[in-house]
Length: 368
Image (cartoon, rainbow, N blue to C red; front, side, top):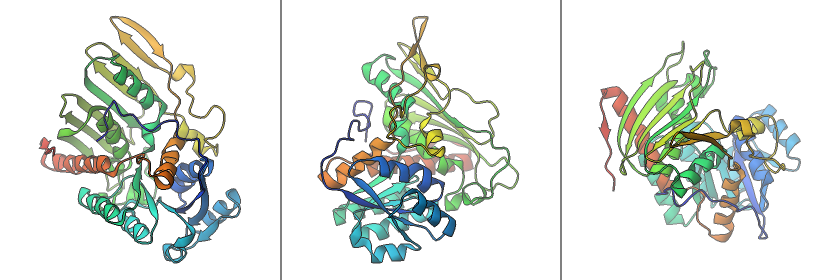
């Protein structure tokens, strides 16, 4: 499992090897915004195909990426799989595991959007299958390349904060009326709800900073009218090394708290607001622009040590580095940008959180 001395892969964008052809399965917001522009911008990767049965999305993909093949079904893609090296799965959550299995069996390296699977058991089965087939399998945890997270990682690695005893992290939004989508209006058992949507990001960041979790306490609620899955969640995690992580995720936050508040025995670090890469991707920008990933100075976090407070220049964010890592793992047998075993532990935490909320108790997790 990763820890604060390993760090997310960085500086992997230089490439002089063969071009790898990528088929993107799904062209909703995830595929259109969070995957296609990154794939297209990374040297050595070619966005060659999109799978969508929606005529409007097919037209939008063809207009933005001229020359790609649009497959109406995954069966059409599997029949033509010899043209591609990598499949990226950006579809509803309950389809992630079966599509990942089919893609690997078709001979393709696979990137799965979060959540990796709906259960840790299914995730282990996929990871075992990848090992049996000798195939690359990784999970899209792009928030490891947020500017504020990379900055915090550096502060912890340098020992600036000392021994961290409390980590607070929030993804909060103000969406008082739920959208009529599977993500907001579906059932939690099918992967809907905020715990499966934002939870994998918050949990993944906490685990990568502070290591395995040994106990979980959770408050999981569905507060908005017409919503069946959770839209307001709080998690309290106890890490094996002693740090306590408090994680908030909510669609009903009219006033946001700090994005990070990190307390150590030498100092504290606080940031406000979200990383700007998502907003720029939504606006149609590409990650190969000159100022990509930069946070303006008024968004830098503050560091407090012995009563003195100063702003800390933000490390540049870089979602595209995930796909540079995919390219190098597939083409050069380099380490995976995200190891599935790390993500399996995150799914164990989500499962423990649901048990905790149901039983109103702290749930212990074995650490092997």
